Image (tube, rainbow over all chains, first blue to last red; front, side):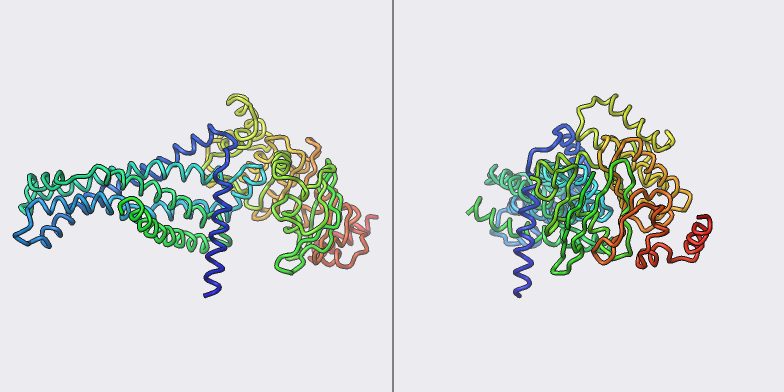
Amino acid sequence: MQGLFTSFFKNVGRYAMLMSRVFVLPDRWRETVRRTFQEMSALGLNSLGIVVIISIFMGVIMIIQMKLNFSNPFLPPYTTGMATREMLLLEFSSTVMSLILAGKVGSNIASEIGTMRITEQIDAMEIMGVNSANYLIFPKITAMVTMMPLLCIVSMAMGFLGGYSVGWFSEIITTQEFELGLQFGFRPFYVFYGIIKCVVYGFLIASVSSYYGYYVHGGALDVGRSSTEAVVNSSVLILLADIVLTNFLLA
Amino acid sequence: MIELVDVHKSFDGNEVLKGVSAVLEEGKTNLIIGQSGSGKTVLMKSVIGLHRIDSGKILYDGRDLPSMRFKQVKSLRREMGMLFQGGALFDFMTVEQNVEFPLTMFSNLIKIERERRVRECLSRVNLKESCFRLHPSEISGGMQKRVAIARAIVLNPRYLFCDEPNSGLDPYSSLIIDRLIHEITEEYKMVTVINTHDMNSVMEIGDNIVFINKGTKEWQGSSQQLLDSGNALLDDFVFASDLFKKVKQAARLQQ
């Protein structure tokens, strides 16, 4: 138990020290901007496909589940659409989507930086006098923090599209009922709430995964291990952040 | 010139360097040799500043690295070039971009001037132009080492460090790399420090050899002095193979 605490505080300390090296003025702004755009494409745009597919299917499944479970005749028919909307806006498009992206993007970041560490590419940068933490990690964090809100909005839109498609292609719910559900008691703040959460999650995924990649020691096996640790720990932190943000923003 | 004065370094109470003092000279290839686990890699990393030493001095032309502030270390590092064991080329960049990287980060040259300098360096290490746009994974190990040398010299460093430059190379490619490093060292008047246990390199380019044994400097001299060092430990290490024993006998007969 004591070892667990020691390890926890050691990791927190090293993470803080790494972040203090990441958030300094870059040696060359132009190079940082160029790399940030590259990372926005690699981490953000390349995740668009999985976000679209999962969001559409989740929209469909949510409508079917809601309809099955809201079979009480006292509930108005638009309840299904309304509940689906709230689920998508409040949790699915931000938190669940971020958990999925923690798996995809987090492992990508940790293994990329980890491989650079074990093949001495990071040491090579340090010897040249380049702040490797700033050069490699800062663009990734910036890219994730800017792209996550966009992915969140896309996910919300695609989830609704999935819900609509149930109305178009089946008799589970009509499109009118779904539309009415979407509009009934709509609070625009919930969209911003989702976006704010995604900004925080984007930071957590990129920084935690980079941390695990940056401090890898050993060989290919250790890179794989650090990649798994990155995904597990960023997922746990996302859930903890969800509790804090929900209390802070909605309570 | 790099001067090491009584350098000590321990890891978790285990003393790896036990007071190493040596002088690494300008315009010469300075070789650090020793058995695996003798502390030569730790010594090299301490000299570069990747390891913080426990006590002693590492003087770069009189400037003590361990007592420097962060900005001074950063500035000194721009005078260093390093060739890593595996090349350590950035695999997300092409050959050209790898060599251009230090120029992009630290020089104020415009794109055309940077490209000219990159081509100059790549030609200096005899790399064909057809390789310039390839990624490191698309070229051979020997070529990767040459690109790494080009990247190390692109900013005209005063100090060049090479960590086992011949590992994983065939004897012919090793010889080419050794000669290239030697030529460049004389041409640019650099202090070149090579960490190796390749005996061919020791004989071929050993201007100044530092033999490390169990964390201490056991012997220092040139490859000519190596034959008559009178040091039993050094003889056991350098002339371990039958081939080198015969070389030594032949050299003595010639004398």
